[in-house]
Image (tube, rainbow, N blue to C red; front, side, top):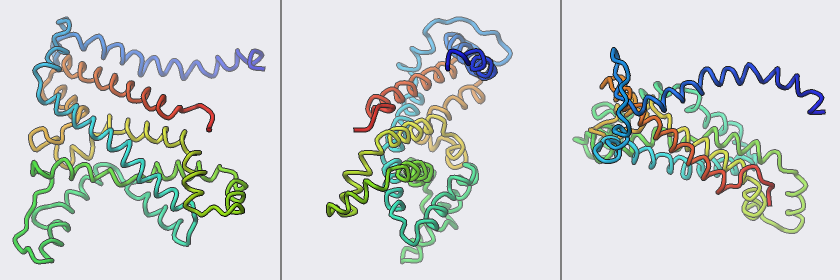
Length: 291
């Protein structure tokens, strides 16, 4: 059947393949090739070999801090964020009276643009009139004025909390997977005397391996493109405390006018993402049958 329709399959795939080649493949080739050059606006690329990469790993504190921040956020997003979403999905799957309301409300942060979320947190954490500082003043410390986003001690955590707890997409994906589990499994477990806790622990969680692995990849790789909220809240500051690789690429290319060097950072970012995806696929054995 597949062989008979091979011509039609090829015909329908051609536009997608052509679009991928034009938009992505060509761009990747240009990105990789120009990462070995000195290149700025108004000047032609000049080949300099591995100089950009040598500078990245030996003489660039901002790059090291950006890579460290990105790595920490990837780990937090693929562990804590996914765990929160999974826990919330398991609770909602019990379909108590509040489950539809809770599911809808929890989705709100994910349907608001990143810029709007950034502005919201800027207002909440404003040192003068922000809700958080106002609550602290209300409970006795009348002179309290913490600049959450611009204090070296709190900036990283403040930025992290603008997205870490809001795992609605993970929750929806896992809820859909739980709904696909045959009800007969739950009925058999209840007949054998299993409690809800044991059903969750020994039936639901093991059967979610593939979807949890997928959520880990989606959540982790989302941190490799996170820019909007960081730009709106701290801009990567104070200093380089909240700078990540996308912000560093943006600043290097558009503010420092150094496209060759920024492209070398881009190549590193792509390599980081590929390694992360491959590790997750192997760790969760995504695509293999459930045991």
